[in-house]
Image (tube, rainbow, N blue to C red):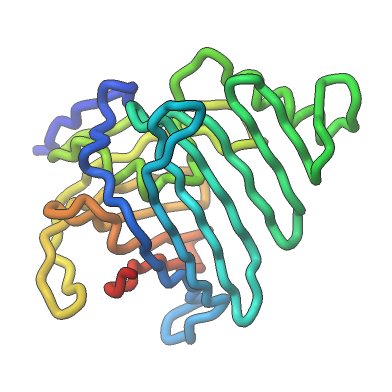
Length: 240
């Protein structure tokens, strides 16, 4: 018989800030394009999670730097409330897209150092602005920080979490479902680590995350894209 799945809408009260691990971490990210194919598009993601103060309030800052071959292809700094992890500020730079900055409380947006409004810009820039201001007054979480968010969920068997994710500059905040589909033992750094399996599926995309029951960290992602391409994300065991 199929087991019943409980559905939980993630709110500010759901997030367990005490489970967030501070400090530096690295992830190995790569693509496999078929059975027995070599790893390709290999990246190293460098992440640094810190407690800071902003306007006399406790916040969490997450800095990211993604290295590909001998080049930095992406950087980001995301600041969230230390109470419920709601975004306060987000800035990013992409090698192919340039820079964006979002200051949540005053609802200000900059693209490549140009302040954007709903009247002074082109269609694409106005869409970025509109998607951002549509989030005003709502509780949401920064989708660019999904690894950190997953580590703060009260994971348990047969539960679907509806997470109000927002990718800055795209779409609007919306509930994305992630379900604990089981448990597994992952051999990691020579140790057997008991993990939750957190699963997400949408058209052309299936993701399974291995999340340590002990430390709450995401240790592995296996992602199937369009049924023919695998993408892996593996936490490297050496932290600084």
